[in-house]
Image (cartoon, each protein chain N blue to C red):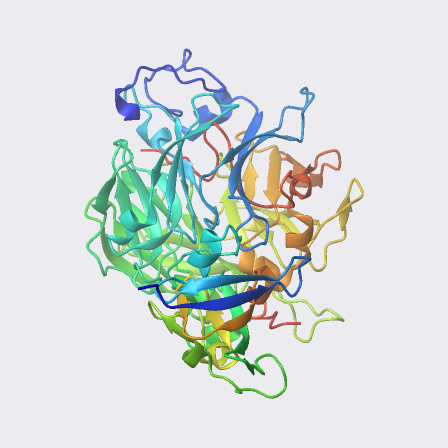
Length: 129
Length: 467
């Protein structure tokens, strides 16, 4: 029997790169599927501790995510992904805003994600500026 | 392969013929000054982690020989096999603490990945063209419930000790991982649970003491700096003094709010001394610590205070953020870098209780008077520093940690780091920018890279310890 998989579309908001769609098996992470498709995503620890691989959910199962916009919570990132381990690099506010750690997250529905190094930089800003 | 069992065929920048010992390094700090040649090569941690550049981090070999055609150029790059490491700090398999170990060589660089927990062993027998020899994979490290390798020092008998900032999940506690002289994991050095947070460490074997400092749990500092974490007490403010032989904490000093995030920690080089310094990065202070002769206990006292500065475009006064310090080989000067303000400074520490400001240089950062060198705009302030053995040339790079760079100096990732140099006059206590010197990581073939810690092939002011 074929493995259950979901189409995940990857978009690089701040980089001049073509949008790519990969089929991610339910038992693999988005990062693993991207590597299988020879797509380079940023990563670091691969254990959910460092946040280097952070992506942001834009759309899941046809429903637009309002994460990052003024209205929030149209879709819940916890419904769209299951985690292999606890996503320790993300605080509650990050999870509520639709951020997801692609090194440990497997999709449960088809979805669209903002990816690339610029997404990680959204997690914290300069507190003095 | 063990360096303790190989014939002495390493190719150092200087030879040991005029030495009266057989092992690596120098008999005394003064011997390092007298017998060490001028640094002609530097090894520099160089990284792409966290960017969209599809290339692994690398170790840059930088030409520092003013008589060379390739002066100020990256002349070799040791590419590592994987992306995602965040090369950060590194060290030699042997230093002057093993200088009486016959047959042992200062030949292998131990190069950990801060984010990946992968540990690389590079054979630098050919100083100009080092080669990757062995890789310890993260899973092997996690078996000891440790992650996030940081400071590498050799232990005098040929083994290697690495401070580890987290457990296998990137949470607390951290600890210490020991490698044997075949570069295999020997195990944990200390009984687990002696400390919670960990960062840098230095040891003084003749005094049977080691001191370690505190950053935070990897999961706290990895994503970036968040004031919420400071308020929650997730950042460190303690120094731990260890029994070096037993590997147990004998004393912990809480530096308080003025000692927040104590990072680089240095003992004086003379093996007789119990004095040292630590930079508290967030509260922007330097602490002096020493063993009180009467009680036998260590004490710590704030001796340098860098005031925050107002900036028209910033909402709150900007802290200096002294992220690196070092002590000159003759133990006369303390040097440091204020990464946010954009300053390198030198203090006379002839009396370590009363450091006297000798000179400083305002370059890069948020306030630096010099904002470009040779027409190359500087993106960040001075960060990791390294000093020549004779104390006459101070070099620095500008990247702190990829995610923290992005927060405070986003241009660093776009333009890449630079390595700069100042000429130091130790006799007069002055420091002057050498505008003829510039190494540019913005011109790397795969794209701009960040540059972090600097080491000399034959030992330097931040790696050598004396027995």
